[in-house]
Length: 175
Image 1 (spheres, helix red, strand yellow):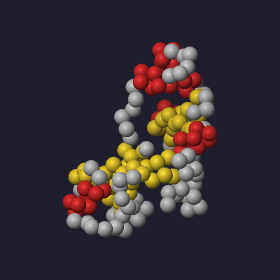
Image 2 (tube, rainbow, N blue to C red):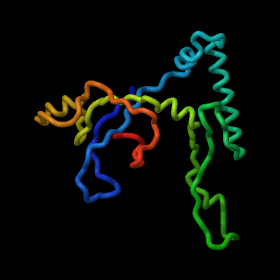
Image 3 (cartoon, helix red, strand yellow):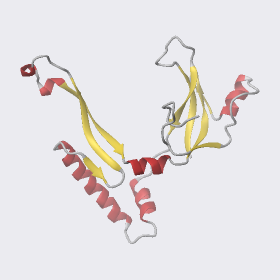
Image 4 (tube, rainbow, N blue to C red):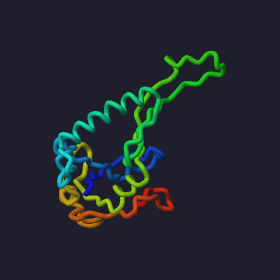
C-alpha cells in the first residue's frame, strides 16, 4: 500500500489557473540493511551477513565501474549510469570539459520486468491533507475542519492501479 497526501498547488503549465489538489507520495521509512537482508534471505540457505557482504561488494564495484564510464546492470533490477548537462560552444576548440560539464548525477533505470512487477496492482491509500501549512491526518479530518459535508472519495480504503502502463492520455494509467 503506497500512501499519499493531497496538496493544493499551482499548475506549473498554467500559473494563471486556479490551484488544484494533487496527490504527492509519502514514502515509508526505509528498512535497515540488516532488516532487509534478514527478510530477503528467510527460508533460504543464504545467511543475512552473506547478503550484506555481497551488497557492500556490489556497491564498491558499481562505484568503480561508474567512475570508469560504464553502465552497471544490477541483475533484473535495472541499470545505473552517470549523466550530466553541458554548456555548448560554437567553436569546438573552445570546449573545456572541467568548466562546461555540469550537474553530474546518477540515474537508475528499472528493467521492464522489475518496473512492471512493482507497479502491477499497486494500491494507494490517503495519508492526509496538507493545506496552508496545516497537516490533517485524513481527508475526513480535513473535511470536518473545513465544514465540507459531501464530495470527493472516501479515504478509508485504497485504490488499485493495474498494469502500471501509460493510458491513452499519457497520464500513467491514473483515472
